[in-house]
Amino acid sequence: MLPVIQNQRGEQHMPTILMTAKLEKPYADWAKAFDSHKSAREAAGIRAIYRGHQLDVPDTIHVLMSVPSMEVMEAFIAEHGETIKNSGHNVESTKVTVCSD
Image 1 (cartoon, rainbow, N blue to C red):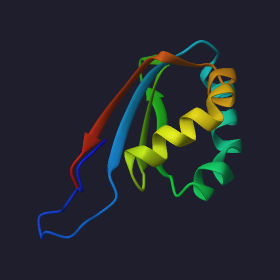
Image 2: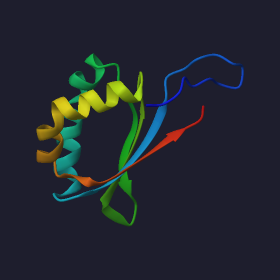
Image 3: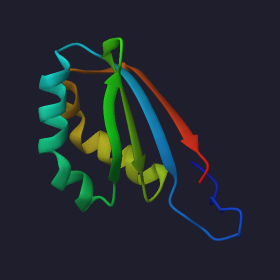
């Protein structure tokens, strides 16, 4: 669980996370699945800011997202885990970095 995050002005804000992972399917397949799941993310309050792959390593993805809380993100992953896995996302390879504003 993350503490309440505040910006430099002391205002509370939603965490921004950078997720990096490996793919087990071609990037185009993963991107199609990720994009088609937009309404589910938005319903959970998760906003994708960027999604793409490492320029010279197309099986390494990076996703920058604004999330209401890490608890919401964890619940989303638990609920949609099968869809995430079927997209080609190697869940075990996932690394998450919480970023400042």
